[in-house]
Length: 343
Ligand SMILES: NC(=O)c1ccc[n+]([C@@H]2O[C@H](COP(=O)([O-])OP(=O)(O)OC[C@H]3O[C@@H](n4cnc5c(N)ncnc54)[C@H](OP(=O)(O)O)[C@@H]3O)[C@@H](O)[C@H]2O)c1
Image (cartoon, rainbow, N blue to C red; front, top):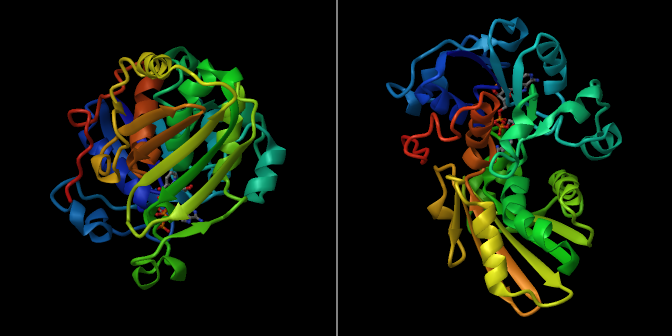
């Protein structure tokens, strides 16, 4: 049985981590750590969780205990650097849901996150935990898991089987992706007010989204060697990521061969649902599924994928990673493979 520490428990992704902790059969206890909400009671912070999960007092992250076995870190960029090196030095298992350890090089981190990395030696030894795609063997000696970003999860799960199996066919690829506003966390921002977002759609962070180098890093490791572009948009919904990736080919590929590659890649992957038609956001919201459709037509392939950014794009995938770290079934702690929440 595991004792778990949740750092950043009072945020949007923290709330989902709490819900999974509560139902995970191998977690004996979990402690909530946060910053400005330290000392408050959980049910006061999330009244919707009253009588659903245990009420607990939030502890100050300044008094972090080293007694837990596993730590989930869900803090703003840069903050994880203060805690993770000591935890790893103490032989703890750490799953970081933020971006501080996802990129492999400190120069890239400086360029995209605008911080100096204070523990670059961990960038190489971490495991990039794209849980539905990477082999169980990779987890055997892992202690630090960098949980992928929400956009990279949706884009990579859709694109990697094609890239890995048909690298020489690809001329170029581009992903247009959409996110609900919870992707930005719970801090108040004028541009995310309902009066700004209702009935609205807009592109943001064009050519400078931090998830672009993360996607490219993983694509390059899987034989990709072509031009790629990535554009993100905000949707007037609270939750969900939708990604449409267009791949232009040098030569036509047999549609049946493509279908068979995806079926093989995701055979026995309980959280991936291959669809015959483009998925819809509402099929995946409140679940840990990634729904994917691949449509081949002549020299073009359109891949659509949809996830819940707070679950598959964060807390749900983090628990898959924890299960894999301990050699357990990926679905343990999930309710019938669906992570249904209470509202
Ligand atoms: N939202 C998503 O869809 C999503 C998806 C994948 C990954 N992520 C990543 O997960 C992390 C958390 O995202 P979120 O959306 O859950 O954020 P959030 O809702 O803004 O919550 C942030 C959490 O961090 C704590 N915190 C804030 N400033 C802190 C500081 N200086 N020191 C220590 N703790 C601090 C907050 O505690 P107090 O409330 O007590 O101040 C809160 O518990 C980010 O790195 C984000 O990129 C988010």
